[in-house]
Image (cartoon, rainbow, N blue to C red):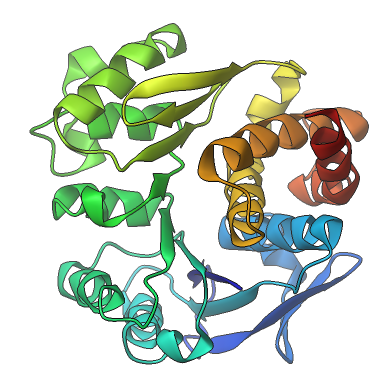
Length: 290
């Protein structure tokens, strides 16, 4: 079973735990409806994409734990507390941490506790979660990161404790130099066994070696649509929880995310939930091709 975690941009810090469901553009986590205004932002895009992927695979829907957080950390603390103290009772095989404030103590409490679960889960980090993993030197506690080009620049800089302090030379590197950044991230021990680096070309990486570089279908307009990186994280999380090995899951996620974008005939005004509606079809088609 897949457990997804993150925060929502609301002032309601109540913790919500439950299965993810979608009805059109209405998302529910357990019995709680997620407001329509948040449905194209961060964790919700990841959760919707993961749900559509589990439907393609015919497996149980993902569970999610979320809380509202507008930057004061109250919601993030509640999510970390749940992960540390209660998540083990669900026995998830895969746990993904997404948009969540990088709170050092709370993060380390969870990472350390995961080692004591009856069966240690496959741990995935994106966004704020991978940043705090690097800052606390716990990248090796994770199994997969899903960074974009900016985040891989941060991982590649051995000295930066925050993305704002990435060396200018690294920050200026264009996307064609992402392979160099990947090598630097591994050299600095700032990457787990697997990476799925998102961008105009997606890179599937194992222990510093690029296994796949995916650039087709090439839909440039997708780069301007917020949330398309979050959907890849949701897809790969669901595939791994469904039994795919991390390399194949990453390859399928990259290709199917692009195909879903193509199927919706996107424009710069397209919302990520329009792409999500095609993910189930895209995942099935991509699996059939491989």
